[in-house]
Image 1: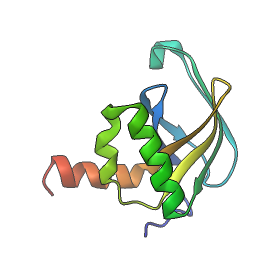
Image 2: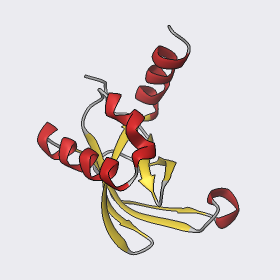
Image 3: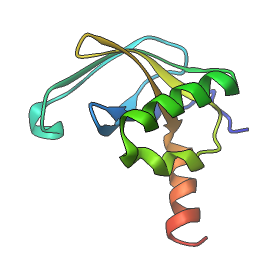
Length: 114
């Protein structure tokens, strides 16, 4: 399993249909705003990124894929089971997340054939 102690960058999937990178501390509440210029619409996230048991992670992943097929590629994630739990523009959500380190490794493995 990855060392998550010092992680501070995470990718959160299906934030209003987008993948959003945030800086946060694992298990600590954070607030993040993505401007309309950056994201095409203003997105305000408030919540926590946390490690969950594999069953809860699979449930959140399945709900995300049922809502948005474009995120099918994240089925291949094999990181620590992370989710973002909080609100996006005031709406309560649970969304899959991964560390930036995990994303970089997956990208290198899947797209650069390393």
